Amino acid sequence: MPDTIETSTSESTAEMTPVTVSPSELVRRAQSLVPMIRERQEETEANGRVSAEIFGAIRDAEIFKILLPRRYGGFEYGLDTFAEVGFEIARGCGSVGWVNSVTAMYHVFLGMYPERAQDDVWGEDPGAVLAASFTPTGTVTPVDGGYSLTGKWMFCSGVDNCAWTIVGVTIPAAVEGEPDGKAYALVRTSEFDMENNWNVVGLSGTGSKNIMCNELFVPEYRLLPIEETMTGNPPGAAVNDGPLYRIPLFAAMSCSLVAPIMGMAQGAIDEFIDLTKGRITRGAALSKPAPMAELPGIQLKLGEAMAAVDSARLLVDRDLKDIMETVSSGRELTIDQRARNKGDWGYAARLSVQAVDAIFAASGGGGLFKTGRIQRYWRDTHAGSAHISMNWDAVGALYGRVTLGLPSGPAQF
Image (cartoon, rainbow, N blue to C red; front, side):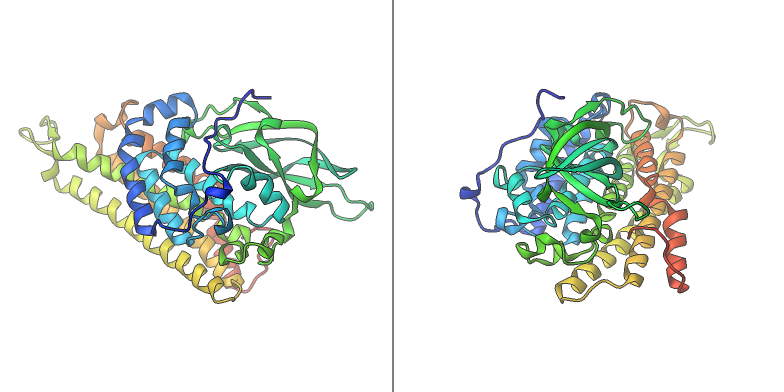
C-alpha cells in the first residue's frame, strides 16, 4: 500500500462560510491558473500525474466546491458552471483538466451516498476529493457489519491526489440462477495497493493507474447499489435536497469528460495563434519568406478549428442548462433528453478532434517536436475522445436508436 496519499488540508466543518464566490469569479480564477498550468505541461507529462502543487492551487481557488453539497461548505452550482470552469482549466493542460473535472464530478457521486458515508469523507475534511473506477471488476462478499472486498481496477485518474476512491463491484447472487448485483464501494485510498502502469501516448499526466485490494472490509453503508444512482432519488437526497443529487449519475457524468476535451482543443488553438503571429515561412511553398498569418490556408484551418470548438461548446452548454432547468423544476429527465445529451456530447468530442486535427495539420514540421505544446494537445484530445462515453460510433448510434423508438439496450445514460 502507498505510504501516503498527497492531499491538502482545508478548513474544518466548523469554519465553513456561506457562499461568497460567484460562478463568474470561479471562471476568472480558473483562467488565472492557466498560465501556470500550461508552463508545467511537460513536467506533468513526465511525472505521469498531477503534482500536489497544481492540485492544491485548484483547491485553493475553491474550484472543487462547485458541486460540493452546501452543508459541507460547497456551492452546489449547476453543471453548466462546472463545465465552463473545467473547459478553462483544460486549456492549460489536458491531463490537469481531465483530473480536475472527473474528480470534481465525484462530489455529485458521493452526494448520492447515505449521510453516514458522506460524513466519513467530508465530516473529516470538507476539502477531500475522490477518485473512481466504475467497471465492476471487484467482488464483495457479506461479512458481519459489511462486506469483504477483493479486486483490481483500471483507469483511476488522479488517484494519487485523492483521499478516497469509489470502485465498481459485483455482489454475487444469493440464489443460484438469479443475476448478480452491481454496486459502488467507497474506500480510503490508502487501503489500496497501486500499480504504476500508466504509460500511454495521451493524457499521460493523469496518473490513471491500477489499484487493487484483497479481502478489505467495507462497512455496509459505504456500498451504494447502482440502481440507486439512476432513480433520481438516491439515499443522499434525504440530506442533499438540491437538484444536482437528483440527476441520474450517468446523465451527468459524461459532461466531466467533454468539458476538458473541448478545453484541450481550445488550448491548441490558443497556442497556434500565439505561434503563428510571429511565424515566417522559409519560402519552401512560396517564392520568398512571408508571414504565415497571411496565408489563406493557415487562416482557413484556424477558422475551421475555432468554429468546431465554438459549435461544440454551444451544444454542450444548451444541454447542461436544459438538465438543470428540468431537475430544478422537479421534473425527471426523459429518455429522449438523456439520449440526446449523450449523443451531443460525443459529437462535441468529435468536433474537438476535428479542431485539433486542423491545427496540427497547419502547424507543419514545427508542430512535430515533443517539446511543443500543440502535439500534446493533439494527443490528449484524441486520448480523451477514446473514452467509451465519448466514442461517437457508440453514442451516436444510441441517440439514433432511442429516437427511432427502439430499446436502448444495456447502455448507461
